[in-house]
Image (cartoon, rainbow over all chains, first blue to last red; front, side, top):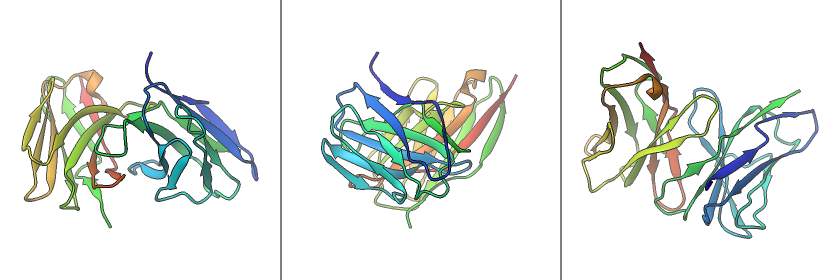
Length: 113
Length: 111
C-alpha cells in the first residue's frame, strides 16, 4: 500500500523528556511537513522539508526539531523546551511544495504525564 | 496576517439533505484551494480542489464553488450520508510553500 505512516499512534511524555515522532512515506514525494492540531484550530505548520537534507521552520517551530536524512523519513522531536506539547501531530507529504494536494498520515496524539 | 476561516464550527443536517459548508479567505493572492475531510482520530483526506481560474468544480456528490470577488468558497455535499460525518477543512495556497488551513466545520448527519 502506498501512503504515509506515522508512529506511534499515542505517545506520553514525561517532564523534561524529549520524544520523537516517526513519519515514513513511500509515495516518492519530495516535500514533507509536520503540523500541530489543537482543538478548534486549523493546522499549524511546525517544519517542512522540500528535499533531502533540507528543512525550514514553519510558524511554530520553537521547541521542536526535525531531520531529513532520507527521502522517505521525516522524524519530529518534541524537546523539553516545548512547554505545551499536548496536541495531535500530523505529518504530510506532497510531490513538491508548489500547489499540490498534501497527503496526511493518521496522526500521533501526544500527551504529557 | 493571512487567515482562512469557516463560517460555522458545526453543521447538522438530515440524512439525504444537501450540506453546504462555507469558507472565507483573506489573501486575494490565493490561487489554489483544497477541501479536506477529517474523520475522528484520523488525518485529513483530500476531497476536491479548485484553481482560481475556475468558479466551480464538481466531483462525486461534491461541488466546490469559488467567488473571488468576495474571497469565499463553499463545499456542497449532495444527498448527505452518515459516512459524511466528519470535520471539513478548507485550505488556501498562498504561494511559496505555504498552505493556510481553516479551523474546520464539524458536520453531523442525523438519521
